[in-house]
Image 1 (cartoon, rainbow over the protein chains, first blue to last red):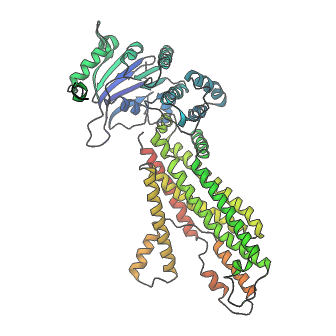
Image 2 (cartoon, chains in turn orange, purple):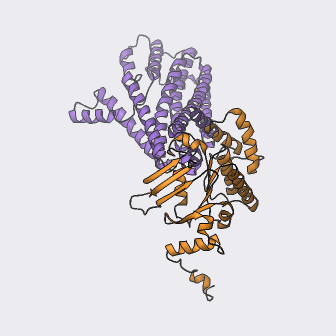
Image 3 (cartoon, each protein chain N blue to C red):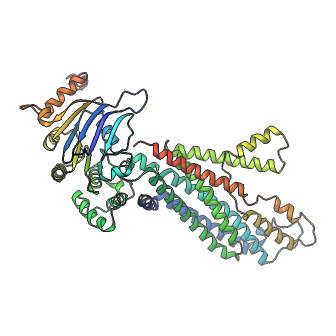
Length: 256
Length: 303
């Protein structure tokens, strides 16, 4: 089966003297597979998914998105990308944003009329008439997920999709991922919420400082009797000096 | 093509909701109406104020029809400057926001992850910016045309051509701001474009003075000004100012018959004329150059 996305020896740094933000990352994603990309802040997860979406250019390595380069607009036709901190043209309303993106996806009038109200209803934004600039972070995140699924993608990239969502929103996203997986859509999930990743992902890679520390199926990465969180903390702490303890003014009983 | 149309359509919708453009438009519209009304009131209540500087001392006062005509000339002359000024303000307002806000807010992340090329995105943005500029300046010109009916009319052609020139000049400035704002803060981009535009104005002025022989014949100065002239935009101008000068001269001649004075040719030649074909070709080249720079800046931009 042809891989939906294939990443090979990917390297990225933002300035010549900077350390590598992504350093030799390699993985493949098959249709119907849910792949979790885990790592502490600054480990390079968002850089990886942005390179796959054609938003950043790698310094080295190869990416094949549906068999061609991500810079090619055609290859992005089957991609849905929900960014970590989504934003939109701020003077548009949610329905206008979706209509704008539906136009970019090349959906005809009939499809737009069908999909937009349903997608808005799924995102809980169907009754929202305000412009995006008046949206809360959670509402923007819902709209970010809505625009990502609008084109019925074959690869859905979710970068911290539930960070600003309430528990109900998180449940809806989990249900969405399960449903898309069942219909053969590949999912690439970046998340700090390890319990969530454990629930929905078949395969995971743990990154730190741009490098893959461990990769494999959930059973391979998490031995029986242990949790993903324990494995994650152990691997990440082993790759970096232990963080300082709490500030002294917090722990010192004499300080008022 | 779908991508260009979608980007242009929703950029226009966004621009139409930006208060800054609405504020500029309202100030411009009120300013034009105020200038027209004030001149009309002055021309009716105190015709000598309007015609005060008109004709040599002791010349006969022109009749009301001539005063109306002169008032219209003065009105059109001021309006040409007002429209040019507001076109530049609008160019800054659109240039600073049309692409910059998408790139800086993160809206571009969603847009660029869709199957739209950076070329289509740029083309859509530039098309929307130009349409917005043409609509706003066009509406101000239309208002000017309506106000001109207070004074009789007859200079509509000059107004329309000058409007086209104002839009052309402002469009070039807008492209410069758009290009700069893709790789620097939009306020800094506007300041840089403003300074560049100011330098261009000075250089063109010096070149005009050089052509008129006012700056002597120093070869070094001549070469320096010539080089400077061909690296800055040349503000396009219609023949309006000369038409106005010619019309004023005709009125002057009518009211000062037999009293001598400068010849029509001397008087008209002292006023800058319409831009040459060379200037228009230079404008087209610069528009293409800066549009290409906008595209290259958008293309290399990582979001």
